Length: 304
Image (cartoon, rainbow, N blue to C red; front, side, top):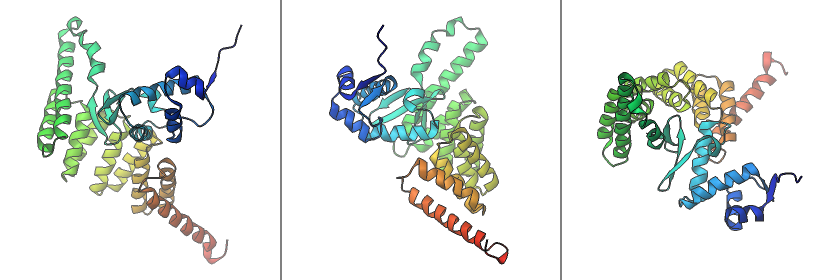
């Protein structure tokens, strides 16, 4: 009996999936595939996903940027394994937490495709359950409309009104809470934004993005201990959430807890080493390390 093949060469993979070696090498250079002359069965599955995205006319750079951003939200899990993808023009969205998420802009939209199958069951449900499903469907439609309106110039207030209508239809609509909170935050209405973000984390206590947004608004309101707690929850839920590490480090710095900040500066640099903020994070880490060395040398007025 012949043992099953566990690896294939680059040439075999390209032939099997009908892609060019040039494209395969480009994905390797971009870090979307492991370097090497052979691929495992899991690598082939990833290649199929990348081929599908490329067929939707998404550039390698757009795919890489979206995957990196989604990786920071999911943590250790692979976005191509854990979250289904949907392309909208040049943007890549991921199915996550019952919604579609653009990981770069952090905009949320409900996944209507996933809800279609459930719609067929409505007629078999008891009246109370059917009414609840209809309320949720109405909220989803209003939310999707709000997302489209918000993308149009000068229509932020109209979008906010639609988010509020969605929440009237279904108060436990966490994505509407988050998006409405972000509109309020950007307009300087921090206390109202806090209310929306707190509602979102109550609805979904395992959603890192909601805790990150809550931390941001608490920081603006000078509620630093509460902001730190929110950021801590975000990085606990998603250890690879680079932006949450960065903001948590900033909050620790303002609390004069430089040693605690150091850990998160270092995390941020490892997770997002080429971002514009990585230089600042490295500088802060170096300053803290230098000051810590000096404090040890002069402890008690004597050399240690």
